[in-house]
Length: 135
Image 1 (tube, rainbow, N blue to C red):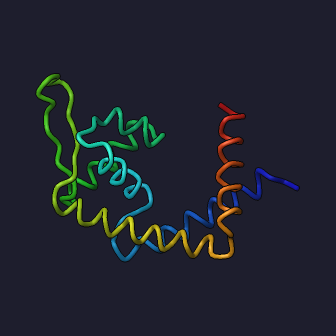
Image 2: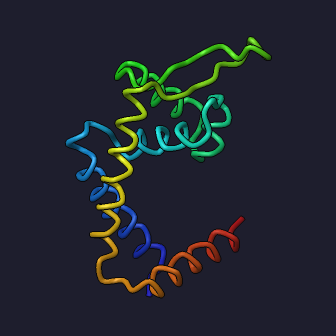
């Protein structure tokens, strides 16, 4: 079996499914990832955000610019280190991120509808093993 091909095909289909699920809210999966991390870790620097999202800094900066234009994120200068800017969600961003979380949970329920709880645990374990093997 050609696992890399199968994995890539599944990843693309899952990404497309998630994109379609988020489309009505005018958010991409990449924007959702950044919003979700900001919600969990705020206030957070752009550098930390890039590390946690496993995206390069220019990509994160572009996503942040979009989120700022959509008025979802607040950018403030760090009081301790004035060279650093910190990001957090504003009220609109908090509300949207809560709705996005529900939307993503529903999408995941559909994606994994035929999986038992044991299947999901096994799947998560296998993904972790793969990740550990290639680090």
